[in-house]
Length: 298
Image (cartoon, rainbow, N blue to C red; front, side, top):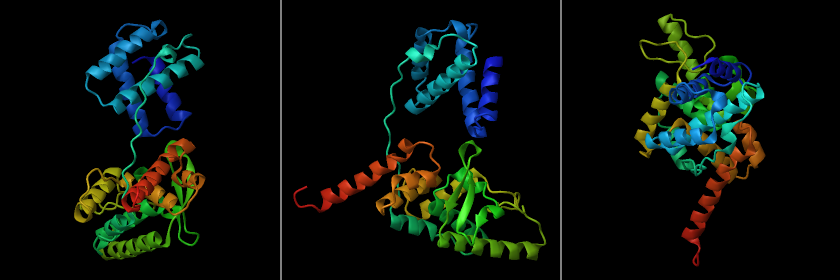
């Protein structure tokens, strides 16, 4: 890659506050594009060249979502180049990219959520796992937000959490009494275990890794995904259930029970209301299913 790509990635990191994971994806997409670019200059590119690149991506049998992401990276990249005056014409502006079909998110029903959350044991790891599951469903947080929670970020009296979301933006999330009770139960037993073993854990992290080799360190996204997989296998045995499914369930259950869309948008930390509107489709679909099942002349 060249200095234009480096400047673009620095812009995303410094000015847009993109997450490390997103920056890695952008860098990977640009690396693939530059490999196809070879010796050609960015200023000389036209829509025909970009169509050829789009065809190459499709011939690699990439998923439609992966192709769309790579083209979205290029769209953002060329807008940056135009704005900074590095090129005079934007070849992406004339390229039509097929829109992706919006998939309805996977949602657990309320009974499935209850069975999932109540399935961990009452030992230290079980209490931690239940506290994590309760927090995911009670707040609708992303996994990355839950693992970054700090002790001082949870207000047990006010019943809220301070969350750092995408783009390092902070928001306040209400958290329910059951989740707070589960967190207290976990912290009480964790403190007793620390005193018994005379060890010092991470003083700020809310949820810790308790495996022998990494005990005391902050739990990771991957560990939370494994935790959810384990209890899903134990309780409902449905496919494609992830920690994000609890976020989807959180939003859908709120709307089903009468919450307004704007409030759900704020709770989820969505910038655009259109992102939140997908959950109204889920709620409507459930209503239609109930209608078709129960109405005598449906």
